[in-house]
Length: 116
Length: 228
Image (cartoon, rainbow over all chains, first blue to last red; front, side, top):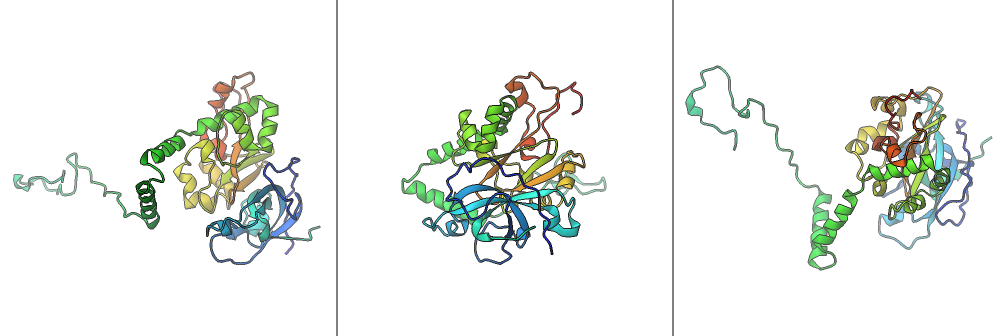
């Protein structure tokens, strides 16, 4: 099914927290990986498999999936704010299809999407 | 037990006082539930840290008091400054935490993202996974913010939830929900109410309530002002 993508205006400023740059850019279409994972993680189920656009790069932060087990020496992972339309998240039952939702998603949960 | 009374005086007026207070109201059961595993773990860890001299009860109390001293009034100061000072607002939007520090508000490790309400967009904040909240700026979150009902419904039907808070938005305004899923925390910058031109920052700050900074309400409208 073709994703219903939001309009995104890139923030127009650099992330205030250190980042190595990340593989995605503001405005780019990305899909949240649909998979399951064991243990603590911060990628909500209701966004798995949904496609949105990068709203901004937040910076690079330690992976919560490692921090939860006190592994503090992993490489920081780029964190993004991703914007989704309610139509994309909830389909035909969306309260208002054009309303939007932003969530913070770590890079390893995102994959690029070829969006027109 | 306070409601034990002498049953020898003869109840001949046809009803039973048993279980009622002296004024005739039923007692509510005590709300004492057993400690959860994590509450027990917290107490155990705290006591061990104190016993081993790593921290003291006074230090813990001081930290609790430091957090308790934070309140939505801090956030209201930030909002009022942003309303009167466009250059400050621009810095606030780029790096919310740095801008708070400019005002002498120490937000510690809080990484603040400020989202602005405009004529086109209304922002509302939630943490669906737990209860992330900009505590260092607004103090402790309200109980409803942590409920399953708010957390599950505001991402599904934000307009219905806002309406229950008395906030009805124009149909052509986009609602933008922010789910605080990771390291950022969010402050809604409400729209400045009409009729406040020339007001001082202190007076403006009094219009900014906690719920407006979460996004379930709007900033207060001054008395006597025409509707926006």
